[in-house]
Length: 151
Length: 281
Image 1 (cartoon, chains in turn blue, brown):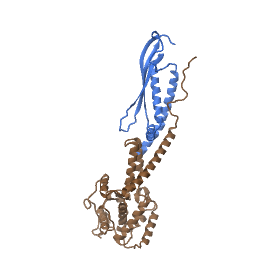
Image 2: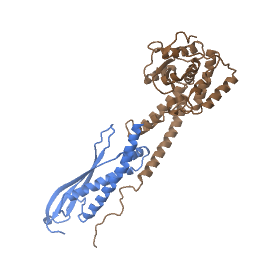
Image 3: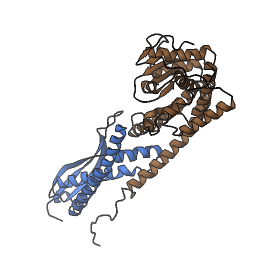
Image 4: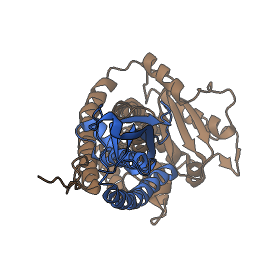
């Protein structure tokens, strides 16, 4: 009985606290994305400028780790039964990827563009067979290009 | 042509669904399918129960703790209860494929249980409320009725089915399976109304066979305080608050079968001690 109460309160906590953290995070992401919107981050392997215009190139990365909560996990385990889109995890991945990309951009102040940008995702803290709440990491990396003359 | 970088208006990577709505739909679907599986497999278990041999039942019994040898290590109260059961068996009022052992378990609850492997567990709370030998004999005979009709296995079958289903769905260590198991434990199923009525009818026959009359059969239901908390009473009352119905059914059956009233035998137990030969047949 007490275990049931504990599970229910953790789920409620996940819904309210997790939801609050998510809304707050999205506000921050949207604000910072708007600020960094003028610097392109592209997946091309080549630099669309002649070599002599490039002053410096530097490998940069940014990573973000987001934890799931009990509510999202409950929704996902219910989804595991019936199949379909696991909507509760989608926002986690979306947040992690965008946050990682933002951190990558923020790690190279003054860069004019980022080329060869890649995003990778991995689950961490996922102990199989144990009841643990795992989290996921998104890593964004690429090459920051600094030009001689600002375009 | 001038290109202006801008943000997409909507987030295409996140499905626009309300999490609460999704939870309700999924939980509703889960509960509905669990109920369906429970009913179907429960029916299957009921069919299966008829074919479980006494040997298999003995094996199942080991899951519920070891069985004491009759007569060895039994307390005075247990010996008295055992003698009542043995008496019914030697008079051939009850015929079961295996010997029955009676055990007394300390608890404030007023209840008695029929467990697989021929074990009757009487809670000490019930012993304190009983006022005559006939009354106690009726309760024991009622439990014997559950053995006769194999109700104890039926209840087990459903429970097992539920445990198996939840493990299959969520995995034995999933959050969901924990949730299901907890809620199953909370709403621990009891015998159904029909099963109780059948055991009552059986007990009345046994009582008449063993004592030659049926006095004391309805005593226990009458002794219970009317506003007793039903949760504390176990399967005698919690699953059926309609004691009056059971009393009436017993009296009606008594008239139909022309069973007589007789003398109530006093309890051999006084303040925890047993008077010798008070319960000899």
